[in-house]
Length: 332
Image 1 (cartoon, rainbow, N blue to C red):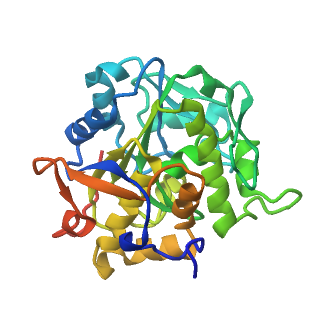
Image 2: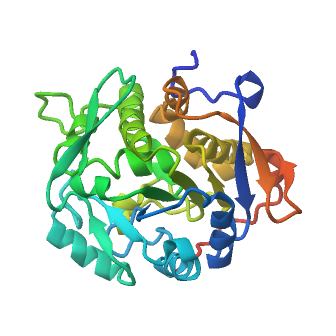
């Protein structure tokens, strides 16, 4: 298997290029979220969009709305920010704008404005260097914003293998009828999920590139590693039970570095701790998200991991996950 094979985990020793900074805290709480946001918020300016996966109705594993409410209330730069979403490609609790708004109420996203960006149509953004697509269709409201905070629940994904910042943007900002179809469906196919494995990972990453190129330096990434089912939050109450230990929160101004660091933390766990999640990642060829982001010049897969709980010293993934406690569901 070569580096383009999405089943192959590339050890740090085999990676080349520059290093980015990734911050890490074990503090899974509103305070931990605030602490890490303050390390990466330097370019959050103007009208700020907060891209979340707000989840299907009563989803047990989403980032708690109370945590996000506290963050947005306490941080001056986020006091007037807007949570942004798009409608889904599949028929469910967020398929139409009306269904989506009802689901937002059920899940507690009522404390600030939530913009369903494709509610009034779509626009296209160019994809520079893409091999599958030259543009991506996104919600028309996206271009109303100056900055993007990507706040992601890191977990598994039924087709992507894992869902980090790349998936949150790539699928989550594509509009529900056109953009998501370009990512998931072979033209002319009756199977809406006909694109899989490496091609799917590459299309997700190309979609993400369109968005982060639009925002330029005014975009940052936070990944919350808690309640990590092998299922995405789009599966709601039907998600597989969580068996992977909670880890903490990571943040960076480099999308590849933050997703890669999360993957490295998963692989640094014991076999028993990471078996289910690694199997989900590798059987879906999910690691191709990382190698293709690097090929597209979207960031670095080498990084310095800064431990905010220990005098901001540099640590390694193995050290970060030592002594993980057996999984315990963290409820909102």
